[in-house]
Image 1 (cartoon, rainbow, N blue to C red):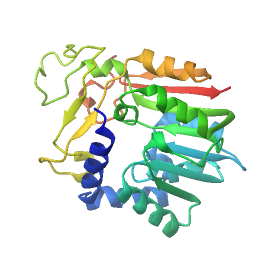
Image 2: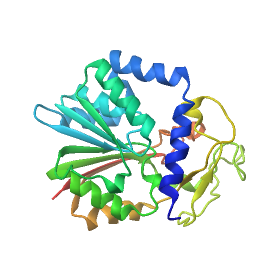
Image 3: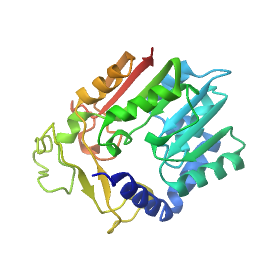
Length: 264
């Protein structure tokens, strides 16, 4: 699907144009009062150990910039976020200026980022980012380009195992057997959804299509290894981080992974 990046750009811009007042209010309120609440416990612990004077953080697929800006609370001097949706980066730049935060945002396809070679000490990839890329090899190639030698990439993402499960309301979902495997772990066809981004808009309905992809663990590990990253740590939890499997939280099913790797 050669045009899926543009397809997703249009879908995300439509979703953000319809963002609810509650979504926008929560972002600004937490950035003012409790920015670390925008991260999980595990990400708080990791970022607390990585921030410091003179350090710069980057984020791919930053959405409306809330996590990029919140990361400044860990002591980074500057933060830069990248996202394909033009209206989200415009809003993020406006919010950073209004809040007096040293963060800036650029609207771009992640694979086409230019001018940030070896710019970052830390690069964060948060929940729901990897799924928008059909091939992770060029994604991790770009991650290597923007990180300084010795810099760290931190990935918090939906656990690949959960891609085999049906979500509530999906065809094949059975409330009596919610752990039943429905999809292939090696699914090689895209997911195409046209029911919007409820977490952002707080309303259901037909939307422009979102095209996403499943990735087995080997694609993440091999992509990092191929581009000269050394794995520093991996944590897997049974805590839902994407709002899709809240009914399976704390039931022993791997739902979230947090991976750290250093650019050699």
